[in-house]
Amino acid sequence: MKFDLLPILNADGRRLPLNLELDLIGKEEDGARFLTPVSVTGEFVNIGGSIELCAKAVCRVEYVCDRCCEAFESDFCCSFEEVFKKEDVRVEDDQNPDAVILTGTAIDIDEIVLANVLVNLPTKRLCMDDCKGLCAECGHNLNQSDCGCDTIPTDPRFDILDKLL
Ligand SMILES: [Zn+2]
Ligand SMILES: [Zn+2]
Image (tube, rainbow, N blue to C red; front, side, top):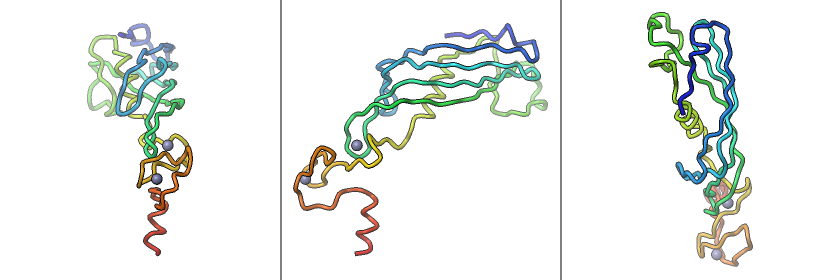
């Protein structure tokens, strides 16, 4: 979706609210599957000619647990900021090298939200903090029950114990 910044583009101090839902239901990215639309709330502010966006994205996501490989759901929430500058802003005046240079007056807000959500997805994914994982011997999910195999659980915390023995 294109979002037009024209109403505040040339008015220092002017604000523009952002409220949108980005429909990513069913989309899978990097092992995460979106279960709800991404709800985005925020505000654009013109600060000295550059447009700053502060926003928050909220949705529900399904991940696969790193240890037991079971799918689990979790609430996702991230805050992000972006700065946009008009094309005619001289480079030497630019104090923020990460600013997105505007071509025209509109931005592709979907693309910006999606990029920020993806970089904020958790890299460590556990269905619960103390997930017991799978039995190295028989593959049984040890969260459900003990399988009876005589193995040391494949939990990195136990690697330290192995070295000590
Ligand atoms: Zn797990
Ligand atoms: Zn087992």
